[in-house]
Length: 440
Image 1 (tube, rainbow, N blue to C red):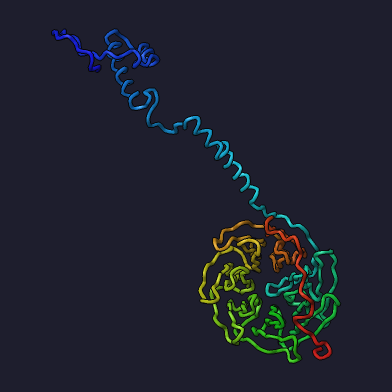
Image 2 (image 1 turned 90 degrees about the horizontal axis):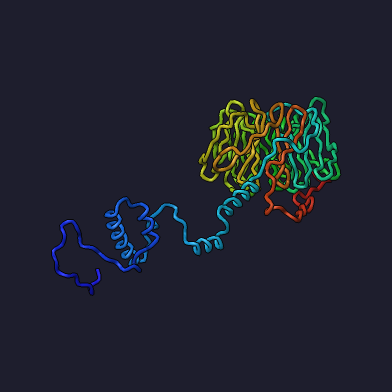
């Protein structure tokens, strides 16, 4: 109320209240017109107009507007703030849409059709053999009955490297050296041979096993051979007396064999359902695991975690177990639902591929350590017996008794990891130092 105004002292009418008489400047005309349209009687109009004028005077003093809600859901910012946000973050939803598009483009697609199919007639349908291996020089070796064939991944040429001379015998295993200079061949009559793919000449033959050699593994100049009688021999191929150690830890055929990349530990799996871990300094197992309930052929070391070993069991087991070979602890297990014939770790992704027999005859891609399935690839009409990983780590070769050798691009390289310069292979013969005249 204006303090300068002094009303006359008189008796107030009984039906009137003290009135606030505002200045015209304090009245919001638009609000008054709105209230006028809403009013029903002259008395209400007078009271409402007076009350609203008072409220608007208080609102003006507080710096707020009565025709806007002070608190409101999803209220828009003032125009100048909205413009600032657009300059900072771009148009609404554009960034999230772009991110979604980029994520969709970056998500790789695994094809379920092979890139190439080659004929592989005469492959023995034997779970315990190891008849396929891919070298660092892009040569794929495969044992077909009595012969070993080599397919050149660069040219597509195929040559016959060798044949078993004894009638009725057959090739039981093949394994390249780390640099791809030589191929080891195990035979059904217990012989372990070394061949030079460049000259197609046998460098030496190391006899002594009393049964077939079904698994091979190289560690520099040491060639380990697993036999049907359960024994594992270490051959030093540099010397005439090649047998330097014999390991006895299996009571049945050794069908899985793999050296850890640093050469300190050897892993073996057998038809006695056992997994043995051998320290290079000892001829007794460092530890033995009996968790599998079927033959253990799939034995694979993880390339990015040195002490991690994966092993897979046969038709009555169907599990893949993961071991810490330092502590002997079992880290994880997964039931694959099918006979496990091989495991191949990716060097590009934190994943691995398992190959299977009955009942699915497929390849399965798994993430690790989540052990979630990334993809299933229907591979062959019969069980996938053997697999090999290409030297660039992108392609899996599979072979089955359906007489097909197939190639699958499973681990396609990420764009940022693509190699522009091809690494030169190590010099040939320097790791084995054959003295042919002395060792034949």
